[in-house]
Length: 109
Length: 120
Image (cartoon, rainbow over all chains, first blue to last red; front, side, top):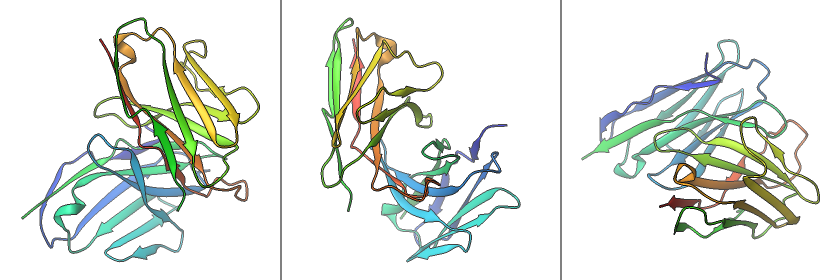
């Protein structure tokens, strides 16, 4: 089983749609979790950290389910500029980040 | 916010050339920086952890004599790809954590812009 698994997509949605991504991780000792966004041929940029209590930042909501070892990202009212690859990232130790392959989102007019 | 600068952003050179990539933390000190590599349509893979003032820690399968890392100061780490060959062509990205956290690694890492290396 891969350490961090994501559906690669692409997810094709119209503007204004709500879309959700899930990510599963295999290491139950994982300590912290993040969603990064990566545009084509660019570096990853932090979108949000994921807390046990869940967190929301504008149109973005992240949830963590430790029992089932999955993380989710919900994007509401999708914008064209949301088109990107969303990386699920798990920190399994002091500094070791493990990246999923990413889920591609394409928002169309 | 934390800014990590990486230079150069693009390198095209002949096989056998050695290429140095710099990673700088511009507004904070980073005792630890990380070097990743990303092949097309693949996830980022950690190559090595760069520690200021000491030897880098390499991930399994990464040749330390091939990928030389020097973390000479709290704001600069360099990765040198020695005698690069076409199979070394990839997107190389560095990152750093902003501050010492509780030891649980719960602070996010901030990434440089990346260096796209093409070896002909």
